[in-house]
Length: 205
Image (cartoon, rainbow, N blue to C red):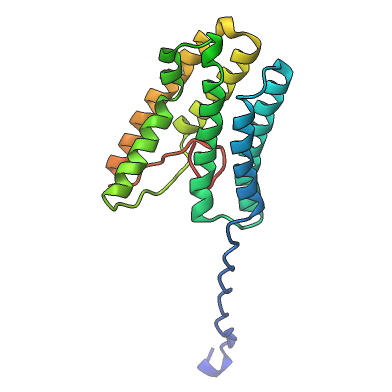
């Protein structure tokens, strides 16, 4: 077959890449769902009915599941959203646990164990900001497990406070695992540490 007999391949002109999506701004649906957890956490301090408290915990957990999902589906993931999600998680859990301290269902030692992971990640975040380092946020199994077990602890404090030692132990174990995992991730990636455990893909918890 001669050169003139060879089939000619038509080359398509290079296509222009899609333009980057516009900044969705701060008041996205996912960010609003995250922010809802702050007033929900405040209501812990004013409500003592077990059913209402359970509804508050359930709604808070639901918003935590939905905010990241909606951010991914609507392509509105932002850097501020990745920070806002775990921040609102910690405020919600912290206020919920604090509300049980006066009841005697949980002592200070149990309280410290339940917020150990949050104190560590919050401290690391503040220190890295003070020294001018950037800290990427990545969801990691240890963080997600700790957050889920914190919710279990809140439900236990509401309905079966006599058995709260078990979730406290589990949260403590998960927190230690999460802290070690965060540290190892930081060593492997320089200063890259996953700080959240939120089930959402855009942030840690």
